[in-house]
Length: 256
Length: 168
Image (tube, rainbow over all chains, first blue to last red):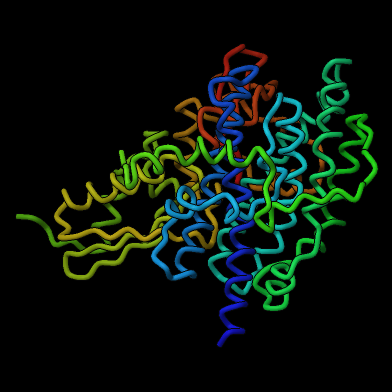
């Protein structure tokens, strides 16, 4: 019995990683609402945020049902402590500027594409349905981010410098995408999910040519490894959650 | 005298429930109603979302419920189903003409997303006809319009901006 429970916990963590990464990036992108450099981009980022939060809602609801402890999407989104979030650290980093925002979207959605593709044939039918739905949206998110990555990277001196600075800052956090974990092994063995380390080739095949076209220099890999997937977050996560959870923490059960 | 609520009648009622964002087409023409079941006067409707983040999803569920109750259903249950995922190919052909007349260029076939997936960089599809003057000399201003399902375009011939319903 213990074995079964353990597998379930590992799979719930695997699902939470997917849900939380969408949720936290959606929260970050929504910070742009009303602050975009031009109206069209303000709207584009808000639309992307909505899709990401939609993906998170579907996945969190699924986690709540599998867990069977009566937690719904809201309880999971708003009432967990920082260490219970399983998102990769990349998505919680501050937006800084438009360059870092679109480059992060490009790096992350290039991971989501092969991920959703693989999860589309998960033996977990609900996850497969979420993945098939999300894949279609992510194609547009990534194409938007890729366009801007090339435009700004291969743009003016100022835009190029900002994109290179963003890449130097973000790149070390992408190592976490592919670090092996027991959750990946368990999900893959049960054919519920794909082991993220196996997505690295597909990710690089998408990312490296576009960065080259954008005339950006890819930094060397270092031993640095963030551990958001294990619930160990950067200093920025607490601030993000304070804002995101404020209403439910202050007025428990509040609705409108 | 209220006519008995059958599945057939429920479909008819739903064919007059407009999409809240694009009121010229109905929820059935949009292709998001995937099934209707009737048991006595109780109706069960299966709907699928267009985009997972579409803010209209809940408004649509409410208007479906209201329309059926007003038409005589004793109760309405709405089930959300994700699979198979909605595609713009499910928009009825007649509705595509209505979209165009409304000023929204209807979606091309779903060839484009595959291209998007295979090519790292795409600066927007070309050859989207202006819904006003039908010119093909148009350009994309933004990949996202007022809603996630539409992109913003401009016609270089008549200089008018318009929206393009993106294939999904």
